[in-house]
Image 1 (cartoon, helix red, strand yellow):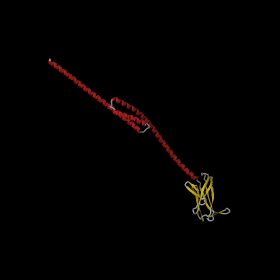
Image 2: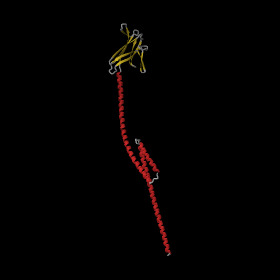
Image 3: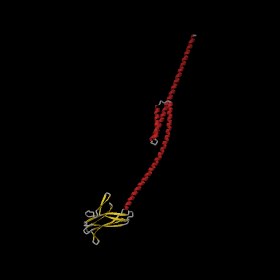
Image 4: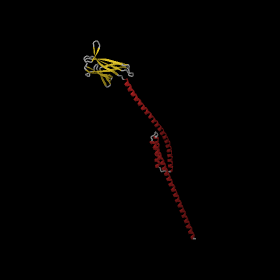
Length: 294
């Protein structure tokens, strides 16, 4: 009877121990399962955080490239890039729970949509700039061609002006000088002796010129004797930085036709030797000759 009682107690103890063992095994299994589930969730959250950071970095790189092109939208692009940088900084400091990551991902999506919209505008601007640059290049070519053509015209006009100026200058021909003895009757007798001469007659011809300017002309006649003295009026005229001492002025009314000019230069005690006669149109020497008195 007592043995039966002991067996029953032993069975009860074994049953209790078996139940405790089963309970322990179940707890260990659940604990292990929960730990694995937690680790899986932590790993998934970490991976999600890394993916969002990677996406944000790519977003920032897109803005960097667009800003480097220096378009008229640079300020707006810089402002949007700053939002991306700030979100990256916040994400890196966050503990990374699922709710927070969900909010960060939503913010990233919003920034991504804004970026795509801005990139479309950038592409439109780039296309317009390319057209403008192409038109500008074409305009530059046209302007350069016009400039070159104008330079050719300027050169031609300068050459034409020089040609006209050259053609419009009057030619002085047949410059002659002779010495004469003036008789009391008024008759003039040519001589080559200095002692007998009391008048020098200077004559020249102004050639016909249809393109020359008509009107009153003044020529300055300079006669220099053998001792290098200027004869006659010995007046001085100034032309710019040049000065000219002349013997007399020959004033002519020119009407584009041939004009013969002759004027007397009275004198006393002419020197023997060579004489030089120069004709000036203002300060420009236009004709010269020489003669000798013995």
